[in-house]
Length: 237
Image 1: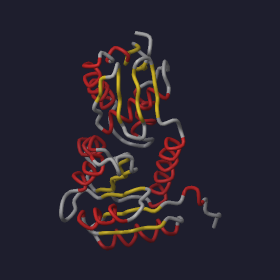
Image 2: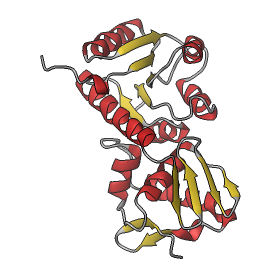
Image 3: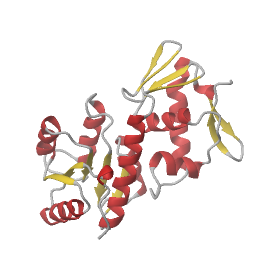
Image 4: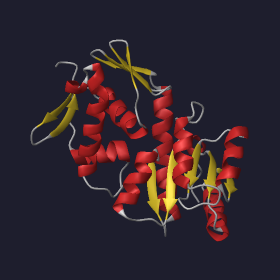
């Protein structure tokens, strides 16, 4: 076996009510060098988050004591866990379900039955992105628009801007790459994650949502449509 890259190992919280899948997750993740705390329900998961340092969470949708979707929303709503990387692992495969999971705040969405090898690749990619963002400058600025990547707070001309999780990720990516034009496919790969099977129209929906959020601060015109090419964020309006 190849040597483990310990820079990509993590303490992972796995929330799965089916014992056989929970055991398989634990085995495969530990084999890949991770430490795993596996629990069967939301109540236990909340206790773990309150008492243990967690680098990433894997969350089933249908769970006792509250759905995985509600758990993800709760994670995103708390300052202490807002930036926690989350993968939803579920048998729900409809595009609307995938969109709902990502909109709730999941960073990636893996459907059952799943490949442990593919799951570990997605975990590594998500951990790298998360650690890169932690290592980078916590404050981004394009024109009058500012974004704190640690607190997820945005401001424009001293006005506070409230962002949902997906809109935060989209705005952060644009602000890390100002003036560059990105196609819908590129935005899907960079913001939603490579291999996430949702339609390009999802990008258009979130662009519209982000513009609506930015409009009260008169920053919506910074997010520009480039006909036939895609979208860009520009400080030159």
